[in-house]
Image (tube, rainbow, N blue to C red; front, side, top):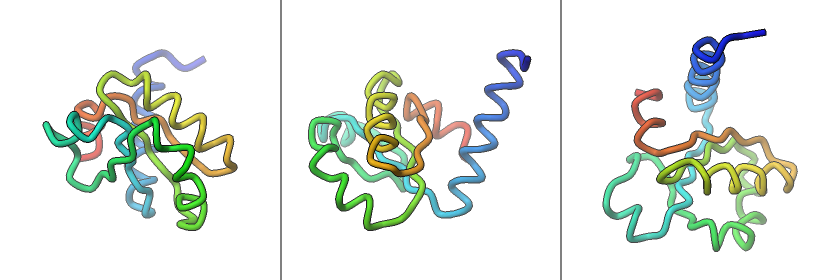
Length: 102
């Protein structure tokens, strides 16, 4: 079984590879939170609006990476996206994700 450090390193590598292959980052915080700071390539789709945006995401035929402030909303969003039959990684807190993808 992989230890926690190796699991985190593997997850970060997967995120980088997904981005290199065209994955899209979805920041599921509120517009006010997003405007206070975000990953420059991220698209803001608040969690409350994600369900209605799933048909649009489905048409994009991309892998998605979700992020938020603490990681709770990004996990919920990732599960919703996966339930719609799409590939998704939970990127967790946006500031941590930003550190690992640069």
